[in-house]
Image (cartoon, rainbow, N blue to C red; front, top):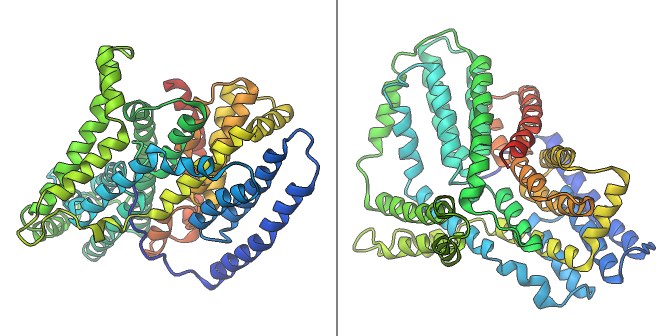
Amino acid sequence: MTDPQPARPALSSAEARFDATRRRVGLVLGPLVFLLVLVLPFGQLSPEAQRLAAVVALVIVFWITEALPLPVTALLGPTLAVLLAVAPVRETFAPFANPLIFLFVGSFILARALFVHRVNERIAYAVLSWRFIGARPTRILIAYGAIATCLSAWMSDTATAAMLVPMGMSLLAFMESEGNVPKRYGTALMLMTSYGSLRGGMATPVGTPPNLIAIGMLDQQLGIRITFVEWMLVAVPVTVVLMGIVFGYFNWVGRTGTREIPGADRIIAERRRALGPWKPGERNAVIAFGVTVSLWIIPGLLPLVLGPDHPIAEAVLASVPEAVAALVGVAVLFLLPVSATQRSTITWKEAAQIDWGTILLFGGGLALGTLSAATGLAQVVGEGITSLVPAERVALTFAAALFTVLLSETMSNTAATNISVPIIISIAQAAGVDPVVPVVAAGLSASVAAMLPVSTPPNAIVYASGKIPITSMIKYGIVMDIVAVVTVPTMVLLLM
């Protein structure tokens, strides 16, 4: 899920100059590429497909360089497609009304309610205060990463990192004042926040936008539906294995040589007590969230229990799709009162603060992907690539993961998935390969990029803590990227 983006950490002068140069280059390069694709002869493309190819080329350049805000570019693509007579306006903008758009809206509002009422903080401090964890640095490190992973499966990775970093910083300040805790422990704790937030988002369809983009494009372009439970059956084991590797690696990186920091458990307990007793808003938010999760999971379990063709399972899946379940939860938020003066758990003003930009970005990607299939552009691109590089399922799955990770290191993982998934679908179709496995691998791989502060907002947030030198982030990020590029496609191939 997502939440309003926290203030971006201040850029260094070199980073600011690079960003400004990249945008200026994009503003020149994008229109130039657009015109070249538009006028050069491509005999294998229909006129509509060639005009769409020019639009897609412009959009990709703008997304990579961030010449315009990503959501603006997502709207510009379909707009140009209509102006260039690629397709009628109703057909072009129909994907913006895809049910998954409403799944985004509903799940974002639910996450916003948990954030507003600080339910996530209560959960985090409750786990850290377990007696088993105590004041042991190693167990605190693992528990901290587990909290990030579990919260991010249902909330924004950005919101999760933004909440946990201040908690971790205050805990580090105490531990460093009371014991001989080396700097590498602080680095490990902050990076655990980022890796847990990113990999946790892989576990559920609503954990991070790339998951829903992969699911949505398979549904929109190929009519293949992946249910909430089906995604989790693959993604949860992948998440568990990746985080197991992260726990082992950073437990070694952040070794302190100290078994216990006296008083650390007391600080955590004090912070938990400061939250006070459960409040009506917190309870209501948990109830609404519980209702939604139940409606997400139970219909997906019925085909596994009763059989995929059982009439009851089919009827429930058809009548309670994931988008409807999310909107039911939102309705519960507005029906349950908090007090006599506030008649709902969340106000519309609070609910409206969700990340509408991500929703528009998703809609724009769906629109261009649908037009690519309808005009034949996707088929031509796929056949062109497969004529150069022979494709089969295993090779394509690993290539999809690597390609998406590389894109995600240089741009938003949402934009990277919007670019990579349509290309992967077209290649798979041209090669006669089932596209589901490589597309799922690409969707999951979009959430593992961790080498640079610009790769994802969680990376930027933890880098701004001052506990992670850029060289350390790159060094550890390369290791984790390599592990993920091997692990994710391998497990997806095995599990699917």
